[in-house]
Amino acid sequence: MYMERSFWSANDNAGKMNLYAETFSKVVNLNLCPFFKAWGWPIQPRHKRNISHLTEWSDHPMVQSASKNILR
Image (cartoon, rainbow, N blue to C red; front, side, top):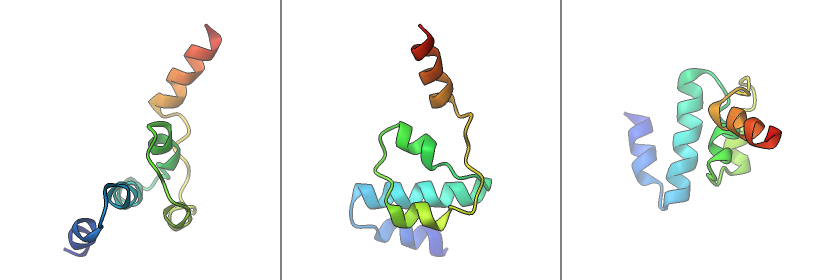
């Protein structure tokens, strides 16, 4: 499968993380970049552009957790 070969051909951990975030976003049809960035993933601009047409997942648990902490 092409995606599997692409994943394993990524040379470093950051490359694999970016490819995973992009692939997972496409599978669920949502832009998951904000979620992964909230976890500290190094999402590169190229991967952001590749899924920019997808709706951002804006109510992910990391946003909800951050909102609760701000209100305290």
